[in-house]
Length: 168
Image (tube, rainbow, N blue to C red; front, side, top):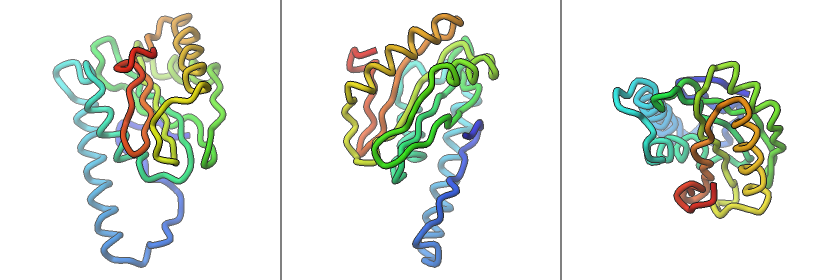
């Protein structure tokens, strides 16, 4: 879907587009996303030694979506962000994810490590059995091409890290 080192605006029409306050808020959110993306991309220290920076970025980027999005944060060997990609878009309760396409995307940007992410439009960040199966499959598949899956973040009303929960 999208590859970027700066945030991508969604193409979804905003039913409140004529509201000047909403437009001003959307501009502020876009500005915050751009700042966070730049910090992730240019950090001198390993940028993602904990999921906090990615968590904040993803909550802003995905937190209010009404449909599910699955993507990857691709990292170099020093855990600096190489690319942020939204790979699959679904509906209100799921998105089909194909590990083959995830691997192709990782090789395309020469990623050494990765963080998977997706949102739950319901607001519930708890992982489903399908989320856990997909994470294991992605970890195994990416390992075949020497890309380390460091975490899988699920964004709802909060942002849950499978690595912090010991589920990775």
